[in-house]
Image (cartoon, rainbow, N blue to C red; front, side, top):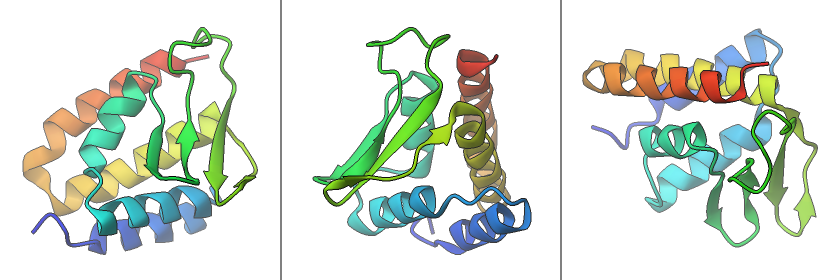
Length: 128
């Protein structure tokens, strides 16, 4: 069942264990899933193409989205409420996506190949 968020809890545990933080990213994904806005694999597809995510007004993050060359893009900005949260380096963001993707693939192995391809595309896009 794709609305099972056990994988997300596992991802959060790994974020913490690896010292990645990721509270804003976790909250965004959790809210996105609860609202049915989009699936996690779609979030990764969008991110791999440089597009951020807006779950609802006042909750989202911004990537380069073609308004800045991806080679110059260095910080992912999260918006929660009316405030911009602390940014993440692109490396930190990619690490969070990788960890979350591994947890997702463990729970939904039939989606693993496509998700892994999009994670690789994300890595390639922001490779430094």
